Image 1 (cartoon, rainbow, N blue to C red):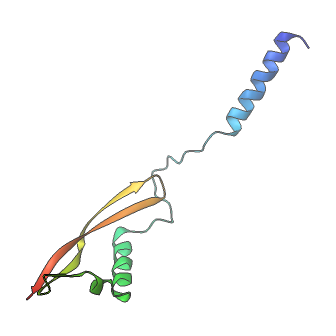
Image 2: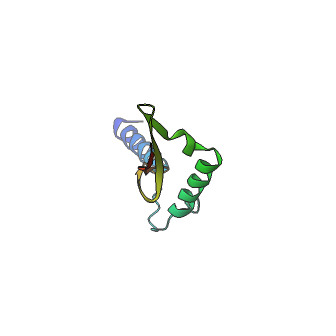
Image 3: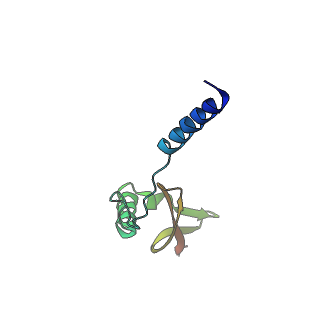
Length: 100
């Protein structure tokens, strides 16, 4: 084989590898069937929070006399997605019911 034939052969091999390793993009605009609505996710967070009694762990005592209770505000939350499969949910805690 001469040099010109060898170059063409390598170019064809390179293009074949490049074409076979191409990432397929989903441009349909629809969400995957794995994702669920945010309300159902927040509801599952809420039931897990209440079942494991995390609300009792969020009490804070100040100067041995004042007890602050921190309560999650389930209605207002923010979420941020990282990549295509990880979503962080930030639920604010509200200081409620100081007891003396």
